[in-house]
Image 1: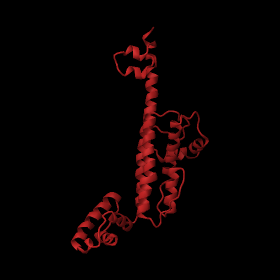
Image 2 (image 1 turned 90 degrees about the vertical axis):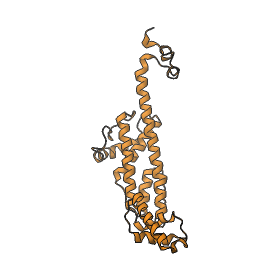
Image 3 (image 1 turned 180 degrees about the vertical axis):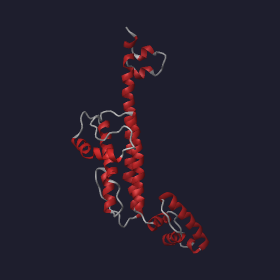
Image 4 (image 1 turned 135 degrees about the vertical axis):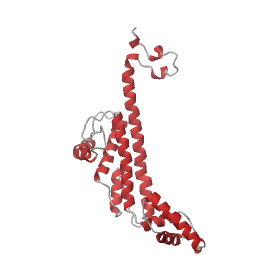
Length: 242
C-alpha cells in the first residue's frame, strides 16, 4: 500500500507514542487541525471557569465582608448577571453593560464548544443578534479576529482563543476596578485592620499604633488602590481592636 494509507503506528514503529495516535498518514494534517481546535477549546474553557469562579466567589465575598450592612446577596443562575444585580442592589457603582454582555457571550460560546452543539441554541442566537454589533464596536482595537456577530462558532482558532484570554483578563480588571471604586477608604481600612487582630492593650501604645497605621495605609493603597491618611488608618486600628 501507499505510504499515505499506512498507519502512524506502522510508519513510526520505533516511536513509543505512535500507537496512541494511530491514524493513517494522509489523515495527520486533519488530525493535527482537530487536535489544535480541541486544545484551544480546552484552554479557553478552563480560563473561563477560573474567571467565573473568581467573580462568583472571591470578588463578591470580599465585597460582602467590606460592606456587610448594605450588601444584598441576590441569586441568579447566570453568574455575570448575578454580579451586576448585586452591585446595583447594594448601591455600588455598576460596570459597563458591554462587559456583562461579553461575559454572557463567552459563557454561551464555551457551552456550545464543550457540549458539542450541532446548532446554535435560540438564546445564543438571540444574544448574537441583539448584542453582537455593539460588542464589536466596544472591543474595536482590542480583539484581532473575534467577531461577535458571526454565526460560525463551531470551531475556535488560535487568534480567537488569544482574543478570549485577553478579554477575560481585561474584564476581570475592569470589574475589580468597578468594585474598588464603590468602596470608601473608611470601610476598606476597617476591613483590613480587622485582619490584624489587635487587642485593646496593644493600641494603648501610641508608637505601636503609628507603626501599624503606616503599614495599614501602605497595604490599603497597594491592594485596593485607595488613598487614605495616617489619621484614618490609626482610627481604624483603634476601632477594630478587641
